[in-house]
Length: 537
Image (cartoon, rainbow, N blue to C red; front, side, top):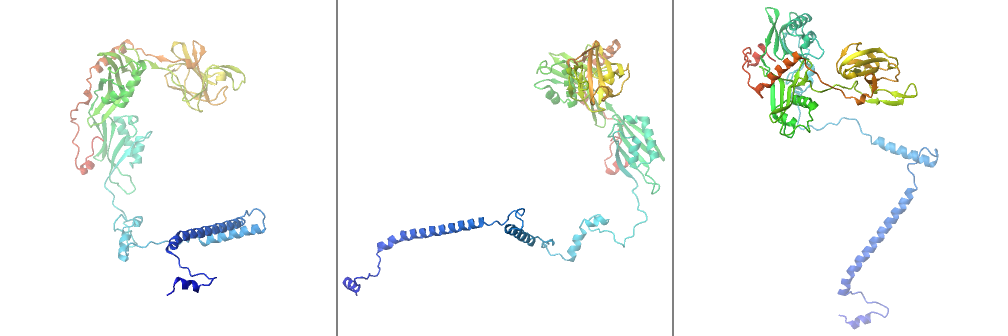
């Protein structure tokens, strides 16, 4: 056992005693070692950063993809070619193949299962199979010399716009002789031109007499008019026309109610058809300001042409009567009368009608006034309106009148002048073709010619002029309003018709119709529907 003195004697003057750290030294050594490790890590990061910077600087000097258009043949250019070839080789090496990729089946498929799948494929349909397990015919199947036909064929043919009744039947498979015969029979009952386009015709074709002959007509039926069903049937080997009238109720539909916040919505809520409400607003709106002169407490009264067939169909016609009622007295009442269908008030005076319509559907390119003439080259008075329009566009008479000039007229080219009432006349110039004669009576909207470029004109357009007592005026400053007057005989018929309409009760047209004795009960079974054709489509 050594003492402190012995330890001091064992150690020479220049020697150091072995390290024997104290507890305090051990405790204090921890933080210093961590700081040392941090210093080592920071120095390693600095070395890595300096290495990366050096490598980046060195690589930035190397140009792997130089412009092959510059310095052709130089080392730089050859290095770029080598880079291109290498990248192309890598791309070609990685080019995908075109071999089919097969997915692993979800179940084990043997020959029996494969045959079952094949029988359900759509491919057999191409070889004549229908569906299910039926397969296409093989060489062992011998075709029949002739296949049996259906004894009759039921089909529906539609009369197209501008089509002939016989042509429609021929397209359906009817022979030329029978088509002409049926058209002649139908023409005896109703004019073929009056049959509206879109009419559907039920046709039953019978058995052929030979394989190359058309099927004969066994029966045919269609709705020729709202009140008439026509049928053609074969009786005793001959085609016979069977007209079947349909009972129709022609009681007009009268609708009356309070205007409220909106006349249109109130009329629609009362059951008025949309077309009738629109006609009512247009008719009343000519003489009455709908926003200022009609109050919420006023009443509207309209009568509409309304027809109901015994088969259930309804046909809504034109507005017949329109009135605004205030304090149980009519403030304004108008009724449609005459062939033209114009409205007249209760005194027999025609309702105001805007007589001036646009002569062509085009915009105005030059107005009334002084301008430089495009051909003559100097300023002069332009005494009308020029309308932009294509060559051949129809030109319409702006209102009723009499043609007092029709022909060639100097710089106007083909020219038409129409004399109207009140000393007013209108002129239409540069026409390509004139459609009216001198002295002819024309109506508003009638075609009087076609747009052209005759006379002093640089291109197709309409030059439109207006005259008052022979003097040219600005057409844009005139607004025609005309009223028709009834004669004494027409006035008597007008009042009679007005009284008859006012006796119609509101909603009377919606009452149940009595049964039509000519209507048979509709067959219930589908086989009866085919064998016994319905009388009404």
